[in-house]
Every structure is written in structure tokens, then in C-alpha cells.
Amino acid sequence: MTTHSSGYVRDLATRARAASLAIAGLDDAGRAALLSAMADAVDAGRAGILEANAADMERAHANGTTGAMLDRLKLDDARIDGIVAAIREVAALPDPVGQVTRRDTRPNGLVVEKVRIPLGLVAMIYEARPNVTADAAALCLRAGNAVLLRGGSEARESNIAIARCLHRALAAHGLPAEAVALVEDTAREHVLELLQLSDLVDLAIPRGGERLIRFVAENARVPVIKHYKGVCHLYVDRAADPALALKLAIDGKLSRPGVCNSLETMLVHADIAEGWLPNALAEMQARGAEIRGCERTRALFPGASAATEDDYAAEFLSPILAVRVVASIDEAIAHIHRHTSDHTEVICSSDSAACDRFVRAIRSSAVVVNASSRFNDGGELGLGAEIGISTTRLHAYGPMGLESLTIERYVVRGDGQVRHADVPKVEAASAEVAVA
Image (tube, rainbow, N blue to C red; front, side, top):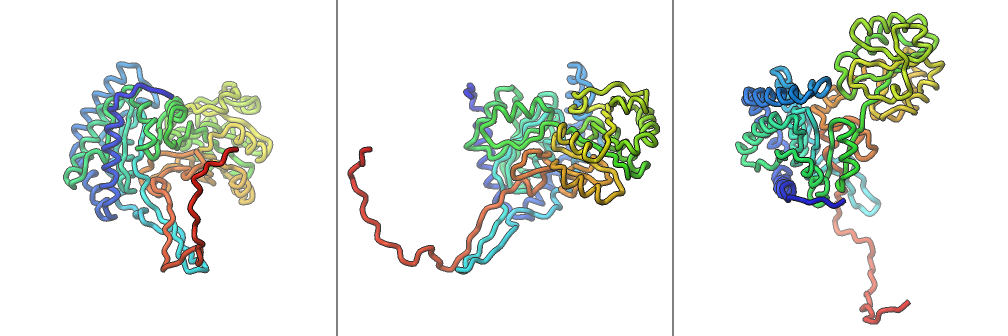
């Protein structure tokens, strides 16, 4: 694809690429200390961040923004506390850089190692969530990378305010500000320019709605790791504990409906449906859920409206739950295979054989047994702040933490081994050119 490049993003990316060498040159202690300083800087700069976020929120309200997008944009003291805590948690994580993941000694005495190294320059393209500015910077820098950030126009002032805090910490450590490079001009053509920089950008990670992610994937000449949406399922098995199943449904759907690991569909085994489903759906409806169900669901719970096939493939990002009664675990698995987004699937069952079958049959990036879908999150799984969730089956699958921001290379150690002991003399090549 041809675009008219202003050179603005290429220049910024060139400087970020150079800054990545400075970050890669830091040792474990140096990168951890840098992140601690960044956490302090965000904490100290919260008044300016909140002021900038208030301006973004005012503009968003004026533009008619509502629902999940508005929730993701908003910052308050508690969310800034969360940003600071996430940076500190990443700083305290074990360093993946230089980690030897495999070591073999060959018959000829060569020692072959696989060793983690930084990716280099990671581009983040995201919308609404200003916390991503800090999370992405912390994770990329801790793993020895520089980061090129392009946030959405709706969070422009918040992103700039957070980046300024991070730049102060970099300057205090004698490091270039471009190690956290923010594309402040949010014009669309700059995204296209960024996505063409295959000579500078090692990996692009889009984070936001399906429309944004598809745009990035379809226009990129750089490697892209992505997930389009989170159509997450809860299967309530015939052997489910009724109280636990309701708890998982409420937490999965209603604790924060506008995030990608919230439940969108609940599948209920027919053997438990009649005794469990009416009261469970009444409780969820009383808590604010809108229920859309199959014919059997509506017969058991008349308060449900009719679900369409499109509903079973939808990421609602709101308190809407699609429900289907299934005749067996096989039917539940088949439904998930038809509609999955490869994000998160949950089984509630006391039957260990059913749980094992579900785990083996489902290929999604996280399969959860008797716990909430909301645990498919980098922080909850012990990764620290996550940079995103990948449903692309490449080097990273599922929540992406520090290890996902490194790659493995081979280091071969020898003491004089050669592959051929006797290499014949190479004859000079003929100057004549053979004609077919």
C-alpha cells in the first residue's frame, strides 16, 4: 500500500530505535531502578494527569462518547494508584533478558543454548485506555526494549501527561526520552506511516476495539500480534455446583462488562437447566443483566428475550448475556468452536473427567476450570501488567507479559570445533556464463 509520508513518524521511530540500544545496554538492576523512578514520577505527577484526563473526558462527553469507551478513558486517584502499583510490580519481576531456556551439549562438545533477548522496538497502537501508556512503557523497558506509542485522539492529553512523567524518569537516569516515544499527533495518516516501518519496528501490538485491530492487521508491513474481540463462554456442566456456577456467572458478566475477559455467552447443560437456570437468571437480571436466550432458555425464564445466532458471536461489552441450553458437553464444545474468538472459555463442573475433556477440546488462549473468566489478565496470572492478550498463534498466545516481549536466539559455545576436518580447495569460478 502506498501512503504519502510526512516523515514525522519515521523520524520519531528512528530515534526510538537508537534509544532501544541504550535500554538494551542496561543490566537488570538498572532497568528495575528506572521503572521504580517512573512509578515515583507518575505518582508525583498525578495532579497534572488528572487535569489532562478531565479535559479528555469533557471532550469525550461533548462528542457523545458513552459506555465502555468512556469507562476505559476515565482516570481517578484509584486508577492512578493502580498504574503506579503496576509499574512497581513489573520492576520487581524476574528479568527475562539473558535467561537460558535450553542448554544441550552435542556429541562434538558444542554447547547449544537458547537465550532470551529483547525484541528491539515495539509499537503500541491503542485507544481510550491512558493506563496503556504506562503499562506498555514499563513492560517494554523492563524487557530491554524501547516503545513507540500511538494512543487514540480521545485520550491525547492524558497520554501526553503520563509520557511526560516517564520522560522525567528517563532524563534522571541519563537515558533518551525517545525510549518511550509518543506519537502526539494523532492524525490517521501517521498510523499508516508507522505500520510501514518494517526496517525500524520489530513488532506492532494493537489494543482496542475490533475495528482498530482489523485496520492495523490489514495495513501493516510489520509483524502484528492481536486479538480481535473477546467472546468468552461459561459452560455450566451437569455436575456443576449451583452456587459456584452463579458466582462465576455474576463475576464474569457483571463485575466489569466492558472488558475483553467478561463473559458474553453462558451454555447450560439440560440436566441442570430446569433446577438452576430460572433462579440464576432472575438473580442476574435483578443485578442489571439483560438476558437473551434460546427457546429452551425462554421457556424456563420468560424474562429473557430471543437470542439470534449473531448474539452468540457478539462481544457485547455491556451487561448483556446470551444463554443457550445444551444437551451435552459435546454440544457445548461444538458451540464454542463455532463462535469462539480464542480468548477465554470457562467450565464449571465437579466432574474431573468433564473438566479434562473440556481443556483438551478447547484451543483458546486461556481455559479456566471452576474460576472466573476475569482471571485471564496478565496481573492476575502473575505476569505483572500485561501489554495485551494475543489470540494469534505465533510466539505469544494469551496475556503478554515480559517474556512475550523477548525472543529466543541460539548461542553456540565451542572450543575450536569445525564442521569439516578436511575442506577441499575451491577451484576458481569460470568467467564464462552458461547459456540455457
